[in-house]
Image (cartoon, rainbow, N blue to C red; front, top):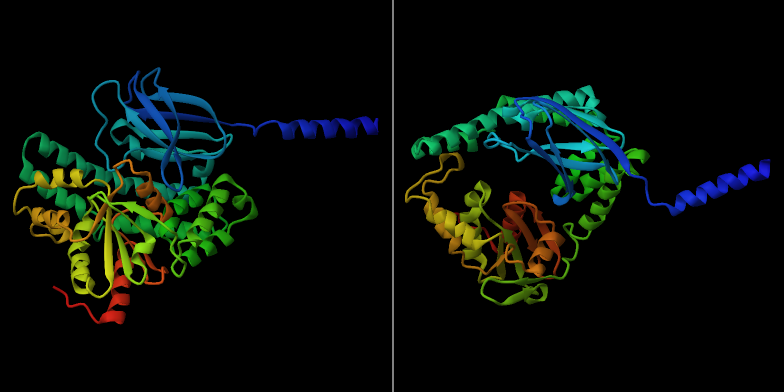
Amino acid sequence: MMKKTLLSIFLAFTAAMALPAQEQKFTVSGNIDGLEKGDTLRFRQIILPGWKDGDTFDVVLKKDGRFKYKGAQEHDMYYIMEYHPVNGSAPECDRSGKTMIIAGNDRIRLSGSRDYIYYSRLEGGVYDDPALAECLAVEDSVGAARGDIMRRIEEANAAEDYETARKISEEFNSFYNDNPGAARSEELISEYFKDNPQGNNYILVERLQKMSYTPIDKAKKDYDSYSPEVKESYFGKASAELLCRLEAIAVGSQAPDFTLSLTDGTTVSKDDFNGKYLLIYHWGMCPGSMQIDPEVQSLYSKYKDKGLCIIGITESIDEFRGFAEGIPEGTSSPSIGIDDLKARMDGMLAHPWPEAELKTGCVRNQAVSETFMITGWPYFILIGPDGTILARDFHEAFYEARTILNDRFGPVHQQ
């Protein structure tokens, strides 16, 4: 009997090894006032760290206000839920959807109202942690208040009261300035991370989205504190893989080889800048880019004859130009300190350095963006004359680059 038992165990084990990984089952349900029968809730998988789309499933409501969906997935997943009403349009929000993490056997529940559907309360899985629930409640409250401002902008535009819409837009842009609710939200999240050094799915997902611009030493320290179980989880393994990629582009490392296709039809590569300082500047339609652009142009003017080269990377110059053409002359934007927004954007369109676009379908340009993990605007990478990465980050990298050039060639005279 003993031999038969051992043989049965061995056969069962080898058979299991031959089968593909078992799918995780989960349930998502909700009680959201105001939803109508026929409304669609679309759940898109978000593949981190780059927010790439994965599989999608739709939930079509069979009755008003309530829904339930039973599904399966290959591993723990990060989703964004989008609302597509059968009648009318979705309410204006400061978010593009409601994000959530679903692990195996989770029973995720949402509750809230149609008008604030993207700020619904989450329960089940990792969201049953009371401390996390408090963090998210405050965050959702702040987001809902910011979303209300967006609705006022839309109402003013619909009434063709564009001056009021502009003033409300300034309120929206300065929303987080000295906002006690936002400050409280940041404080709670910070405390939650400190109290849970061992990690969990929520912490991993949040850090994965920010790891590309987190100092490598801090990212390693965070990862080393995770429990063995967390490290072996899907998002734990994704974190380890991302850390390896980040080490290759950390400050002090040799920049990887790259080639960019420029808007004038030529190409440039890393070797073209041997012996020079190269600042890669990712700019676009964002307040940060518009604020810092004159400083970048000033830096270039000062050092272009002393060994500084700049290459701009943007999504689409034509899209940027189209937006700029629609702005009246003399339009100001006090919240970001710009007296003449159109003049500022026209200046950006007249950059004195070569440019590369990401929306042209050029594979090599997209590859450069992914290799250097360029994740937002404005983003800077300074490569030294010997090919070493000297700075890589958002605004901080620009000011670090300026300091490096100041030390090498002399101070910049601010204009």
